[in-house]
Image (cartoon, rainbow, N blue to C red; front, side, top):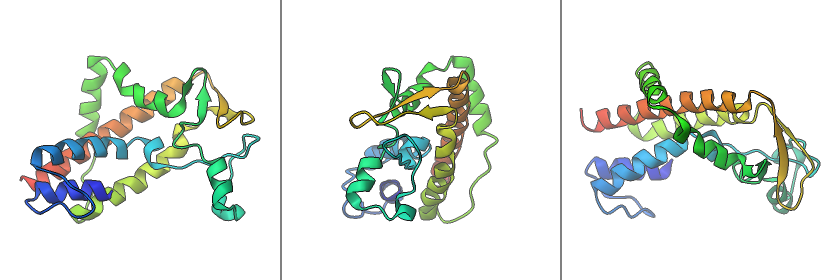
Length: 188
């Protein structure tokens, strides 16, 4: 969120705030587009923790130490294995599998995403909060096994890939619409 706001500052003819070093508007625009895409990928924003037996845990409620939290962290799905891939990687691949017609459908969906009210520098936090809610949906349809090494094995329901494709489509539409909102605010 802070890096998005730093890119917005540069695009608005302000200096890049510390600790960021964004050299020019071209780099700021590239960062903004990339980071806004990441902000809408649920496993980039949400955090899920599992016990070694494959049950969800809430580290703050359980009073876990930092070491216990680290041992139960899934690193954005990087430590959840579905077949030969991790869930985070599967999520990152979803848009790449879309046909041109589906991409057109995402653009059409994006046109229906309402503008978010608020100050420019507050929008990234609002959108990140929205994406955190979607994190649970990204894991719906998975069953988790006992941890092996650093990874939890998972099995997916028959419709899991269809489900995550629909959710990824929705999130991509939001991300595109929100990027347009930012750019239209900076350059009306």
